[in-house]
Image 1 (spheres, rainbow, N blue to C red):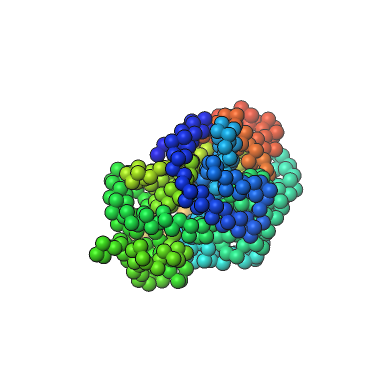
Image 2: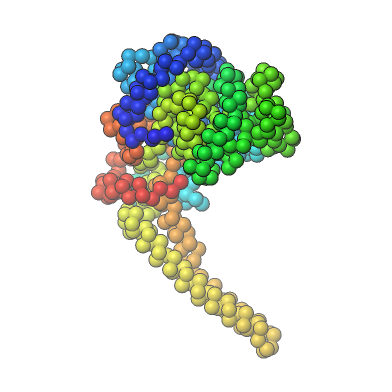
Length: 560
């Protein structure tokens, strides 16, 4: 697997792959794509995103010479930019390849709606806030553990109302703080209008969704298909997986070869997690879905030449023993299984004839292992790219963090933050040493042989001295300032929820600037400096000379 540093190299790799492997797209591949189109249409109809562009893309998908690009992700809550950016890369890449090769090109986005609720980002989203712990305002859905996302109920309307109120309050607090720190009065109504537009997407998705997975998936599709007017085709893995019976059964039929290739991949890449279990080579390449809504990881057992899977449900603990022989009933009900992370690309790339896959940083390791396994098993594996620049822009939270930095460190220069932090830590440490010395004297006094009443009086005097030290140094304020300094760096390097983009830039502008970067620069590794309405304030704040350098400095201070 190779990651590509620019769009031209990626397009060249896709063209080469298409030329080398287009003959492998059999009648079965085309039939699978046509079946996929039915499930895609169902999703977009239920989501309300069956646009004219989507209809045209469905027609392309059914053509014999269609080139298919793919990405996939969990339906995260108010997903961060990296999830949505995948669709932009595929959109721009599709346009370039279509012109180059004079063939229809379609982008497919698979929704991993059967993933567990345990992952942090399917149930939480963050906005930058220098005043809060960990520098973030966090929005959360309370979800049960070890349950599939599509088996959990969507959040109640009361939670949506609370979220909206929290975001409105966040806008008010940030605008007020900017005014207090700089004297610049920002028009909150501009940000509130952007929020209102975004929230109409949220409420419409909530009205149409039946479960938690669909709620988040519908928001993603509405942004990409309706606001950005992309022709990206969405589908739930829980629905379309049943069309890959041949690919699932072939993988399990060749389990010994698969297992050996996975074992070798484990040895070559190390035992790091990366979404892959440490004993993946001993595991059947599918999850089994329990009646409780959770899943069981099945260890492979050779039963007289047949592959059996045995394992306990991670939710209720029920023991499952599944026969995967060709005549097993499991193949007539594929709704009870889903591909494990490493097997997913092997199944879908093979079944659909995928020409390029846009992955994510979190999947880098399992995608590498899948690529190795595919090579060992003689399976085609398309070019894989990961596009995860850091978007640099001056939004409400970011500007407040910079102004806070200047107030406490005397400069916008991030290098000055370290010196200011060190000075505060030393001041707090010196104060604490004095307090600790007095605490030792208190203990020694109480352990001495004098009159008890006199000892108590002396201890009280020492306690008063400790309180005086705290008051004189204002320990609470020092600790607060230290937290603000630390948080200023976190805010400026945070990968926030798409809500932050929507409020500060407006959703339409986000895709426009991503596309412009891809088309005019084409670099897939460098950060992207966004234009915002706040940029006009740079000169008034004295930031114009610092801003480019700040962007460079922060590339080396990347805090998640």
